[in-house]
Image (cartoon, rainbow over all chains, first blue to last red):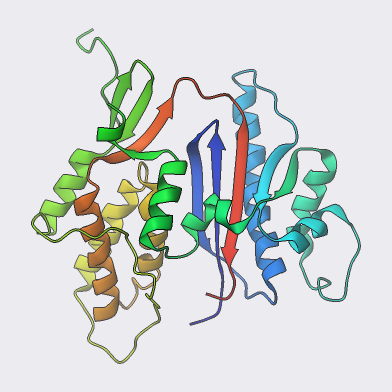
Amino acid sequence: MDRKSTSGTCHLLGSSIISWNSKKQACVTLSTTEVEYIAAGHGCAQIIWLKHQLLDYVIRLSKVPLYCDNTSAINLTKNPIQHSKTKHIKIRLHFIRDHVQKGDCEIKFVKTENQLADFFTKPLARDRFNKLRTELGILDIKNVV
Amino acid sequence: MSMMGKLAYFLGLQVKQLKHGTFLNQSKYCFDLLKKFKMEDCKEATTPIATNCLMDADEASQPVDLTKYRGLIGSWLYLTASRPDIQFGVCLCARFQANPKESHFKAAKRILKYLKGTTNVGLWYPCDSNISLSDFSDSDHAG
């Protein structure tokens, strides 16, 4: 065990999943705030790309909501102040803060129960697994036809 | 023009276009995969990864067939195009490709068992959904 965290992101257009990611993070982190912040950074980069793609279909979106279940990570994106506990977070990871201030995306809070990206970060028990799977629009052909 | 009509198969993805939406899956590929690894008659599992599954390097136990393990991961990576539900499990197993052990192979077999029960699962894109992007990000701290 090298104590590196796994980050997961998923992107939904309407009610179906169009892009997803599950990745072991490259660096060891000191707090849950920091890991969530890094994961949100990954998500933000993908949002920017998706926004550019949607421009080709003349769909212009602003303030795309990015749901995160950690309030202190959310506050970190809003308030450009350095605290002693977050001082070590690299400049690269403040990428997200920049895009929030530009209005490209907006970080919102979501309860862990409704956090769909849970699906890509940890092993889940049957009930929760099935619930999230349906919510993401991953269905059996029998339920569709 | 010999291929006319609705799109049914594209780059390995089976496409089903219905009145109220589009369904994408890779059931044929998934079925062939199970046959290739001789798991077509195995028991079914409800989730790809057990909740008590703690994966580490597991130095002490017996090594397994490297080619087979890596072949398995490779086949799955292709399948994840239409199956986000096995994404996490596949990535977890893929981390031990350099030196796979008995315990990793056991976890890998559970994914096959899960696939056995969910061969026909795929992505559903309904017609009536609105165009709005919503995104989720999450992580687990320190494994």
